[in-house]
Image 1 (cartoon, rainbow, N blue to C red):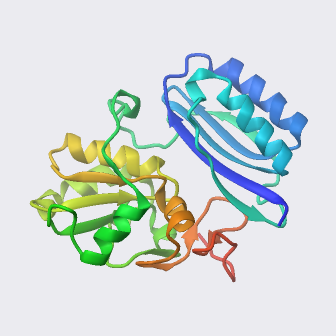
Image 2: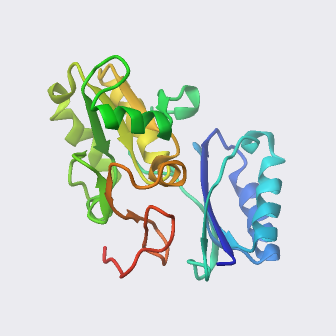
Length: 248
Protein backbone atom coordinates (compact mmCIF):
# COMPACT_ATOMS: atom_id res chain seq x y z
CA UNK A 1 0.00 0.00 0.00
CA UNK A 2 2.60 2.52 -1.13
CA UNK A 3 0.30 4.98 -2.93
CA UNK A 4 -0.96 7.95 -0.90
CA UNK A 5 -4.36 9.35 -1.96
CA UNK A 6 -5.39 12.82 -0.84
CA UNK A 7 -8.48 14.96 -1.18
CA UNK A 8 -9.01 18.54 -0.02
CA UNK A 9 -10.76 21.74 -1.04
CA UNK A 10 -10.89 25.41 -0.20
CA UNK A 11 -13.51 28.02 -0.99
CA UNK A 12 -11.52 31.13 -1.86
CA UNK A 13 -11.70 33.62 -4.73
CA UNK A 14 -9.35 32.66 -7.57
CA UNK A 15 -8.79 35.38 -10.17
CA UNK A 16 -5.69 33.80 -11.73
CA UNK A 17 -6.99 30.37 -12.67
CA UNK A 18 -5.20 30.12 -16.01
CA UNK A 19 -1.82 30.75 -14.38
CA UNK A 20 -2.66 28.36 -11.54
CA UNK A 21 -3.65 25.70 -14.02
CA UNK A 22 -0.36 25.93 -15.88
CA UNK A 23 1.69 25.93 -12.68
CA UNK A 24 -0.09 23.02 -11.01
CA UNK A 25 -0.23 20.93 -14.18
CA UNK A 26 3.53 21.26 -14.67
CA UNK A 27 4.27 20.60 -10.99
CA UNK A 28 2.07 17.50 -10.81
CA UNK A 29 3.50 16.13 -14.04
CA UNK A 30 7.06 16.59 -12.77
CA UNK A 31 6.16 14.77 -9.54
CA UNK A 32 4.51 11.87 -11.35
CA UNK A 33 1.14 12.47 -9.69
CA UNK A 34 -2.21 11.32 -11.03
CA UNK A 35 -5.67 12.66 -10.30
CA UNK A 36 -7.72 15.81 -10.79
CA UNK A 37 -7.50 19.40 -9.60
CA UNK A 38 -10.53 21.60 -10.21
CA UNK A 39 -10.17 25.39 -10.26
CA UNK A 40 -13.19 27.71 -10.21
CA UNK A 41 -13.80 31.35 -9.30
CA UNK A 42 -15.06 30.06 -5.93
CA UNK A 43 -12.03 27.88 -5.07
CA UNK A 44 -10.01 24.69 -5.51
CA UNK A 45 -10.84 20.99 -5.23
CA UNK A 46 -8.01 18.43 -5.18
CA UNK A 47 -7.90 14.65 -5.71
CA UNK A 48 -4.35 13.31 -6.12
CA UNK A 49 -2.43 10.06 -5.80
CA UNK A 50 1.28 9.31 -5.75
CA UNK A 51 4.27 8.41 -3.62
CA UNK A 52 4.59 9.84 -0.13
CA UNK A 53 7.44 12.08 -1.31
CA UNK A 54 5.46 13.41 -4.26
CA UNK A 55 2.30 14.03 -2.22
CA UNK A 56 4.25 15.85 0.50
CA UNK A 57 5.92 17.97 -2.20
CA UNK A 58 2.66 19.05 -3.85
CA UNK A 59 1.00 19.82 -0.51
CA UNK A 60 4.00 21.95 0.46
CA UNK A 61 3.79 23.71 -2.91
CA UNK A 62 0.08 24.41 -2.51
CA UNK A 63 0.45 25.69 1.04
CA UNK A 64 3.16 28.09 -0.07
CA UNK A 65 0.33 30.07 -1.68
CA UNK A 66 -1.26 32.05 1.21
CA UNK A 67 -4.72 31.29 -0.17
CA UNK A 68 -4.13 27.57 0.36
CA UNK A 69 -2.03 27.74 3.50
CA UNK A 70 -4.61 25.97 5.64
CA UNK A 71 -5.39 23.08 3.30
CA UNK A 72 -5.89 19.93 5.36
CA UNK A 73 -5.86 16.89 3.05
CA UNK A 74 -7.60 13.67 4.02
CA UNK A 75 -5.46 10.63 3.28
CA UNK A 76 -5.92 6.98 2.41
CA UNK A 77 -3.58 4.32 1.01
CA UNK A 78 -3.82 1.97 -1.95
CA UNK A 79 -1.60 -0.47 -3.81
CA UNK A 80 -2.04 1.35 -7.13
CA UNK A 81 -3.03 4.89 -8.15
CA UNK A 82 -6.84 4.99 -8.52
CA UNK A 83 -6.54 7.52 -11.36
CA UNK A 84 -5.27 6.89 -14.89
CA UNK A 85 -4.01 10.37 -15.71
CA UNK A 86 -3.41 13.85 -14.36
CA UNK A 87 -5.84 16.66 -15.16
CA UNK A 88 -6.14 20.26 -14.02
CA UNK A 89 -9.51 21.63 -15.09
CA UNK A 90 -11.23 25.02 -15.06
CA UNK A 91 -14.89 24.99 -14.00
CA UNK A 92 -17.63 27.47 -13.14
CA UNK A 93 -18.07 25.89 -9.68
CA UNK A 94 -15.92 23.34 -7.88
CA UNK A 95 -19.17 21.65 -6.94
CA UNK A 96 -22.17 22.53 -9.09
CA UNK A 97 -25.18 23.78 -7.15
CA UNK A 98 -26.35 26.51 -9.57
CA UNK A 99 -26.77 28.98 -6.73
CA UNK A 100 -24.06 31.55 -7.52
CA UNK A 101 -24.93 33.83 -4.59
CA UNK A 102 -23.73 31.19 -2.14
CA UNK A 103 -20.14 32.10 -1.33
CA UNK A 104 -18.83 29.86 1.47
CA UNK A 105 -15.67 31.94 1.81
CA UNK A 106 -17.86 34.81 3.04
CA UNK A 107 -18.72 32.77 6.11
CA UNK A 108 -18.87 29.06 6.78
CA UNK A 109 -21.83 27.27 8.25
CA UNK A 110 -21.20 25.89 11.75
CA UNK A 111 -19.45 22.53 11.69
CA UNK A 112 -19.50 19.55 14.01
CA UNK A 113 -16.43 17.41 14.59
CA UNK A 114 -16.61 13.66 14.10
CA UNK A 115 -16.15 12.89 17.81
CA UNK A 116 -18.95 15.26 18.81
CA UNK A 117 -21.26 13.87 16.15
CA UNK A 118 -20.72 10.35 17.46
CA UNK A 119 -21.77 11.52 20.92
CA UNK A 120 -24.90 13.07 19.45
CA UNK A 121 -25.68 9.92 17.50
CA UNK A 122 -25.15 7.80 20.60
CA UNK A 123 -27.75 9.92 22.41
CA UNK A 124 -30.03 10.65 19.45
CA UNK A 125 -29.95 14.38 20.16
CA UNK A 126 -27.51 17.29 20.27
CA UNK A 127 -26.08 18.95 23.38
CA UNK A 128 -29.21 21.09 23.71
CA UNK A 129 -31.47 18.04 23.60
CA UNK A 130 -32.86 18.75 20.14
CA UNK A 131 -33.69 15.72 17.94
CA UNK A 132 -30.95 15.01 15.43
CA UNK A 133 -31.45 14.63 11.67
CA UNK A 134 -28.63 13.36 9.45
CA UNK A 135 -29.12 14.75 5.93
CA UNK A 136 -27.20 13.05 3.12
CA UNK A 137 -26.42 15.61 0.40
CA UNK A 138 -24.88 13.11 -2.06
CA UNK A 139 -26.27 11.62 -5.25
CA UNK A 140 -28.46 8.53 -5.25
CA UNK A 141 -25.77 6.12 -6.48
CA UNK A 142 -23.41 7.31 -3.72
CA UNK A 143 -26.05 6.83 -1.04
CA UNK A 144 -26.63 3.30 -2.34
CA UNK A 145 -23.07 2.35 -1.35
CA UNK A 146 -23.64 3.30 2.28
CA UNK A 147 -24.83 6.05 4.59
CA UNK A 148 -25.47 6.89 8.24
CA UNK A 149 -28.23 5.00 10.03
CA UNK A 150 -31.66 6.59 9.56
CA UNK A 151 -30.24 9.36 7.36
CA UNK A 152 -32.56 11.40 5.17
CA UNK A 153 -31.73 11.72 1.48
CA UNK A 154 -33.67 13.16 -1.43
CA UNK A 155 -32.79 10.59 -4.11
CA UNK A 156 -31.09 13.21 -6.24
CA UNK A 157 -29.16 12.46 -9.41
CA UNK A 158 -27.05 15.64 -9.31
CA UNK A 159 -26.28 18.14 -6.56
CA UNK A 160 -28.14 20.97 -8.30
CA UNK A 161 -31.37 19.10 -7.51
CA UNK A 162 -30.79 19.53 -3.77
CA UNK A 163 -32.19 23.09 -3.26
CA UNK A 164 -35.64 22.44 -4.81
CA UNK A 165 -35.98 19.09 -3.04
CA UNK A 166 -35.09 20.72 0.27
CA UNK A 167 -37.65 23.48 -0.32
CA UNK A 168 -40.43 20.90 -0.34
CA UNK A 169 -39.40 19.58 3.09
CA UNK A 170 -38.56 22.68 5.15
CA UNK A 171 -41.28 22.04 7.79
CA UNK A 172 -39.66 18.67 8.56
CA UNK A 173 -36.75 20.39 10.33
CA UNK A 174 -38.59 22.70 12.72
CA UNK A 175 -37.17 22.34 16.23
CA UNK A 176 -34.52 19.86 15.11
CA UNK A 177 -30.77 19.97 14.57
CA UNK A 178 -29.71 19.06 11.03
CA UNK A 179 -26.25 17.73 10.21
CA UNK A 180 -25.50 17.74 6.50
CA UNK A 181 -22.86 15.29 5.32
CA UNK A 182 -21.12 14.17 2.13
CA UNK A 183 -17.92 12.40 1.13
CA UNK A 184 -15.28 14.98 1.96
CA UNK A 185 -17.09 18.11 3.14
CA UNK A 186 -17.51 20.27 0.06
CA UNK A 187 -21.16 19.54 -0.78
CA UNK A 188 -22.35 19.49 2.82
CA UNK A 189 -20.67 22.87 3.38
CA UNK A 190 -22.54 24.43 0.47
CA UNK A 191 -25.74 22.64 1.51
CA UNK A 192 -25.49 23.87 5.11
CA UNK A 193 -25.02 27.48 3.99
CA UNK A 194 -28.06 27.14 1.74
CA UNK A 195 -30.14 25.63 4.56
CA UNK A 196 -29.27 28.54 6.84
CA UNK A 197 -30.20 30.96 4.05
CA UNK A 198 -33.67 29.43 3.62
CA UNK A 199 -34.44 29.59 7.33
CA UNK A 200 -33.42 26.29 8.94
CA UNK A 201 -32.18 27.50 12.31
CA UNK A 202 -30.01 24.69 13.69
CA UNK A 203 -27.70 23.46 10.93
CA UNK A 204 -24.22 21.94 11.03
CA UNK A 205 -21.95 20.43 8.41
CA UNK A 206 -19.96 17.31 9.25
CA UNK A 207 -16.39 18.62 9.32
CA UNK A 208 -14.33 16.74 6.72
CA UNK A 209 -17.27 14.61 5.62
CA UNK A 210 -17.60 10.84 5.84
CA UNK A 211 -13.92 10.24 5.12
CA UNK A 212 -12.83 12.30 8.12
CA UNK A 213 -15.42 10.52 10.25
CA UNK A 214 -14.01 7.16 9.13
CA UNK A 215 -10.49 8.37 9.91
CA UNK A 216 -11.33 9.53 13.44
CA UNK A 217 -14.24 7.30 14.49
CA UNK A 218 -14.52 4.33 12.15
CA UNK A 219 -17.88 2.92 11.16
CA UNK A 220 -19.99 3.63 14.24
CA UNK A 221 -23.57 4.54 13.22
CA UNK A 222 -22.66 4.10 9.54
CA UNK A 223 -23.86 1.26 7.34
CA UNK A 224 -22.03 0.15 4.20
CA UNK A 225 -19.15 1.85 2.42
CA UNK A 226 -18.38 5.33 1.15
CA UNK A 227 -18.51 5.91 -2.60
CA UNK A 228 -15.45 7.72 -3.99
CA UNK A 229 -14.94 9.20 -7.45
CA UNK A 230 -11.95 7.15 -8.53
CA UNK A 231 -11.18 3.60 -9.60
CA UNK A 232 -11.47 2.25 -6.04
CA UNK A 233 -15.19 3.12 -6.29
CA UNK A 234 -15.82 2.75 -2.54
CA UNK A 235 -13.93 2.73 0.76
CA UNK A 236 -14.83 0.78 3.86
CA UNK A 237 -14.73 2.34 7.32
CA UNK A 238 -11.03 1.45 7.67
CA UNK A 239 -10.36 3.56 4.54
CA UNK A 240 -9.42 0.50 2.50
CA UNK A 241 -10.92 -0.28 -0.94
CA UNK A 242 -14.23 -2.03 -0.39
CA UNK A 243 -14.71 -5.60 -1.56
CA UNK A 244 -16.54 -6.01 -4.86
CA UNK A 245 -17.34 -3.24 -7.32
CA UNK A 246 -20.12 -0.71 -7.56
CA UNK A 247 -21.90 0.59 -10.61
CA UNK A 248 -23.11 4.17 -11.02
